[in-house]
Image 1 (cartoon, rainbow, N blue to C red):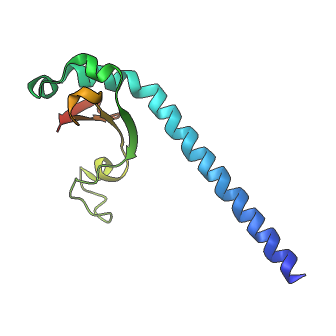
Image 2: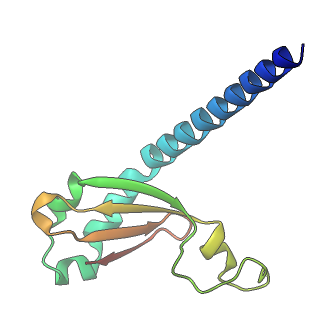
Length: 121
């Protein structure tokens, strides 16, 4: 009887884990699909992209697109909830695009909430 309970508990854990995985991946795909065009346009219009010598066509077919929640380089601790940058650090979604293969590793960080792009090497 104890073995049956353990097996059922493992099956429940596997089911919940798989549902969580499906939810996260479909949410990621939906956000990337909804904001990819806006991110590409913002990266193409960025002045810093032009100064790095990246043509607007390099952003049309990015080498990679990655979704990130929060920006890890903002210096805010998790308990500093009154800080103005707390949402930017832990809550806001960002799209990271890597320019096409000939651009030499130039990346664009698109802030979905503020609709702003930052291009860097």
